[in-house]
Length: 153
Image (cartoon, rainbow, N blue to C red; front, side, top):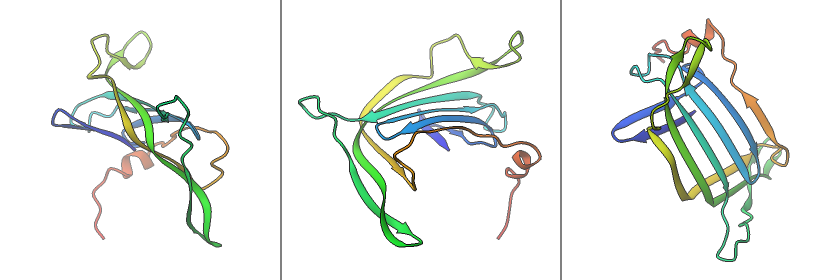
């Protein structure tokens, strides 16, 4: 899930309302999440998020910390965190492009245009965090529709 609360509006992108792509390795996080289902308050949008490890005053990358997490073997060093990441976020309105046959970014100015913070928490964990993770969500019908149904415990 990638979500943004901006100007009194909650933008939630999850696999059952659109699609997501990611490319993650320690030191670099890149996500594109799209909401193409009008069930999300009628808003169709795309969130693009980039994060990198922060640097100190001398421009040296702050390395982060390896942490122990619960595993079947007990507490193991299997996660890496930093609370000094640099993040840039953009939020675009999507419109249907008939010629292309898919949703594309609207030509108008982005809703959020490269908002930046140097106070981003970043993490890689669960192993193997030393490799790059590249993926795309692939939720198909009927599961995509079933996930949205109300449920009771």
